Length: 157
Image 1 (cartoon, rainbow, N blue to C red):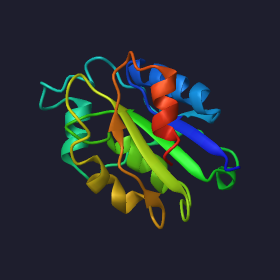
Image 2 (spheres, rainbow, N blue to C red; image 1 turned 180 degrees about the vertical axis):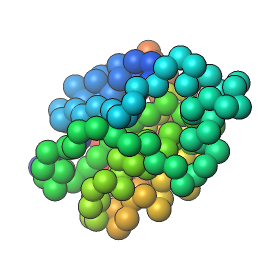
Image 3 (spheres, rainbow, N blue to C red; image 1 turned 30 degrees about the horizontal axis):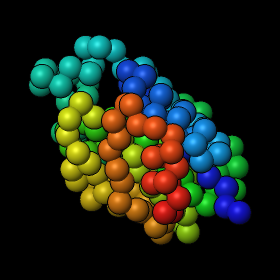
Image 4 (cartoon, rainbow, N blue to C red; image 1 turned 90 degrees about the vertical axis):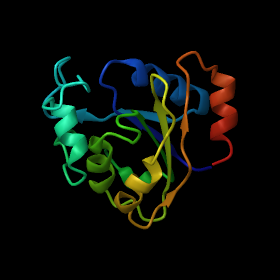
């Protein structure tokens, strides 16, 4: 039986709830990806062209610093990576996380929350960060998704 990890970044708590529900549904370990500097409400203001997130997301090479490290990452075969959709892609902190480990041979499965947009170009933007891993097509979930639906989705990986 393969070992699974649900790693997630949540700026407002919405993705955290989904990640916890997914982890419980599939019996996976849970890990929160945390930025070295927490995002404030002003940082998350996507309508402000000079907000922190707008600056980060317009520079595709930007990698926010994260704190902590997954212990024994090598034990996981499948890593579900959760995040809110920002600018139709994953926040660049997800690239930081993926690039922090040797993901060779692992299956990486993105999942997301969003106020309305889909996954957009998420996989195209994450591909280079998943060196030698199998990057699967991700899915956006509503906050009221049931554990049974999450388990059925996760079972395909």
